[in-house]
Structure formats: structure tokens, C-alpha cells
Image (cartoon, rainbow, N blue to C red; front, side):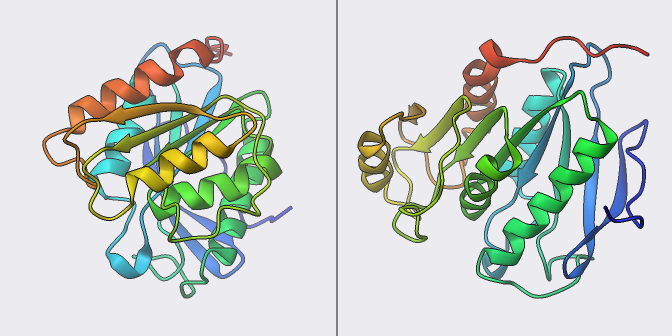
Length: 224
């Protein structure tokens, strides 16, 4: 246990968490009403290619979940914004997601822990899902073929993949082939005429996420 971790806030706010490389800059978003007993960590795209927790796809995924009653934690990977350290090719980034997940387990032990990510962030979310015992995984444009997906221990929880069919960064066919190769494939939503960054399709992404996880929502949160 890291005694330097803050308490989980009672309102949406920015805060600093402790990770293996030092400070992790994070933003907590809480639903205004109809809160459910769940919290999601949302991971951003590649740090060396401009990815931050303020990416519009990341913030849309977070907004979608908050609208469903799920609290969210967005954060900056190592070396981004006010987060300490340097990019670690996915290893340290996964460790930091684990650290955030363990903090959430201590602070909100009765909440279902969800993981979500966009592009590189979806790779990190997948790497951490089994270790954290995630109850829901959401991958947006997983970078199959750009990172090694073959040796990752896959989760057994409900799992949603949203992939644009006109993605110019990730090969959609590689994503489809990877999903088809899995013994227990995730739910796949293919979005026609949609680029990697979901230009002009963010509201469609919002609908895909909300519809894709609605059947797995945790129960209403106890007001106490």
C-alpha cells in the first residue's frame, strides 16, 4: 500500500496519484445523478505521438461512462503533462494502471472496476485487465499489428471493441482477424466511414460505447 495516495474525492476534480515513476496526473469525473457502484480507468493514446488524457476520444469515452453512472479516472502516462518519468514502451504504463486500480480497490472496494482505452491506451488496458480482475473492458481502435497482442493474458469479463472501418493508423482488417482468432472474442462494433480519431463521429462513438456496455452496468450505488 502506498501511504502517499490521496483519498477518493467526493466531487469531480484533478488530483495527483503516486506511481512507480513518481507523480501521476489524474482527473476524476463523477456522475451528477444516478451513480452506480462502478469506476472506470480510461487510458489515452501514445505519449510520443501527442496522446494525453485530454484527447477528444478519451474524454468522449469518459463522458459516455459518466452519463451511465460510472465514475471515471483519466490520467496522463509517464512523461506527459505533470506525470513524472519517461515513456516505458508499455511496461511502466501498465504498472501505473495497476497502481491506480489497486488504489481504487482500497478506496472503493465495493465498486466494479472497469478499464477503457483508446489506441495505445487500449493496448495498456488489455494488458492490465486480467491482473486487475476488471469487470468490463472497452477498447477503442486497438493497435493490433503495432504492438504485441499475442502473449497478453486475456480477461474473462465482458469486452467491447469499437473499430472505425476507415482507420488510417490501425489496420481494421488486422483487428478483425485478431478478434476472429480468439477463443472467446469480444463484442465488435464496426463503424463505417470512421477514421482513427473519429472525426465527426464522436457522438456515434458515444452511442456505441453506451449501448455496448449497458447490459453489464453495476447496480445503483448505495447513497451511504
